[in-house]
Length: 112
Image (tube, rainbow, N blue to C red; front, side, top):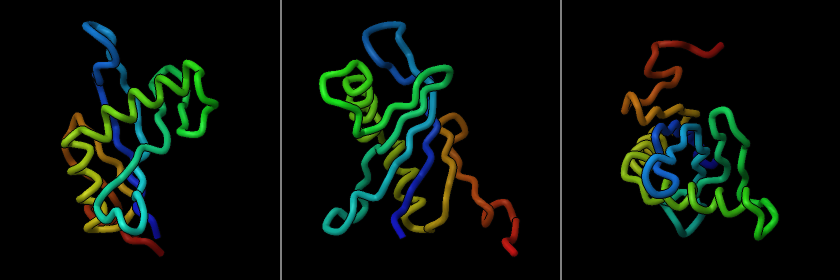
């Protein structure tokens, strides 16, 4: 099963001074041959659109997705969140605000 992490971000600098973005990015395992690496498959902007990797080329949404994905894919906190989830596979939600991960295991919840 491929690792998938919901990575929450706040005040991500989108361009210059004062243009900041908040939302959630979906980080996905890059696949065989790229152990420990991830890519952003989707970006959900708070109060804005959901951007996906497969948007048509040369559209504003495609360019915005590529810009945001590039920032997150190079981010140390995003990498740490993904590595933690990859070590303990489960659906996780990582908040860059809290710098912690949450899942059923860490919250003492049981399935079934």
